[in-house]
Image (cartoon, rainbow, N blue to C red; front, side, top):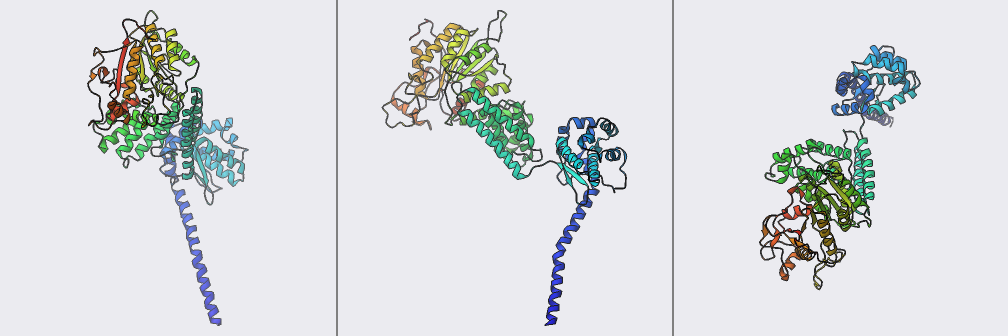
Length: 624
């Protein structure tokens, strides 16, 4: 029995030794790691402080953010830290590091250590020309302060290094310290990214439900400031937005009405970084969509050449985009919101329900716009440029394109949706279009016509009514659904291009002189034919001489012409007037840059767009 107990005791001793073995191995590993870190100090210093050697110490203290960016770019990985030079407590450091450390390790705070007049001047003078010693000097000073139990100064130096240089000080086992670029963990980065996306979505929802432009502007400004703060708080080593999230946020904020150039610049650079980082595994389609969404947000090649240049390379190398408008415009350097594919992204958003279309009752917005446009002087006699009026402009891309395509004219675009005007105004500001050349205003179309007729100092060249929200189909059709939210007919006061508006447009063009042309475009055939009949009834004469291009010979129907909207098929079977023959234009008479998002979408889908242009009737007859 005693022998069994002795054997059991030996087994317990052997088991205890085996239990301690992992702890011994862990301790040995920690000691080896620390020895490697200390031995690699020279290489780590050269790597982490490579950008420092191009600057003087005075520049470091004055521009810490620049230093931080350089460290972040040159730090190969968190395993390449900058470690403070280690010496025994009774040995000396060489040169200015030792004198600085000895003098300030027992001082009362970081102010005396870094910005005290005499000490700082001598320290700067001594280290100038060898600026790679800056951070090691601060770290060694902190180590000596800890050895002398001056923990207040050690903590102050840690916070100062973090605040001034965006570097995190980490204490090593057994003494000493090292610094790493400040980073955030994956969970924090994801949280910041989610906050940014939620802020952008909130701004967009506020814009879509806003009753006036001031609400749109306020929501977009606040959201942009909050997003910038979060983007700035994240170091480059841990981006908070990944994949296509930069382009998503850019498009959302553009639609929300933000004109913050700094924000869009950061988002564009982030998108370019993502394309470069994932170039080998990014499909061409994903690269194309990212570039298209950025362009739909109002970004252009001159705003971020790296983004669009990289996208063009990926599309060319990946194949499948030969002959596409996206690749062609990217390689020509003209890819923008006015290109085909970005406009189709905008069209997708325009089909969303929920945005309010309530024009203000007063004429203040229109009056301010005309006052700004009257500041443009083109003639020696003080005459103003010919004016283009875009009534119901939507997101304003047609008026924006007109302003660029025809520098000889000014453009006034109005819409009842504050959300749409917010987008249009913000893009025009970011593109730096002079306000005396282009004005987007949240205003009633009839009010704008009256103000132009009374106050504008030049002729009216063109009045555009592009794709007005259609009225309901003719009553008595029990099989028609989905018309409850639409105006009842072309004569309804709720229909934007009603009789009253066409009469006001005629009066405005006649009072201001000039060509006085009216252009109506619609994707709904019965709306287009009804508007033509109404315009002719109030004094407009359709252009029949072919000067604006060929006429439409035949309108597609449901008899072998492919898929068509049900409303058009029903109209084709009704026996009513069709949008073909004299006066119906096959192509838009406007510059290609002035195409709307609806026009681009329907053209790309092979669906008809119905157009008719008018001039003032020569006999001056105006029907009431």
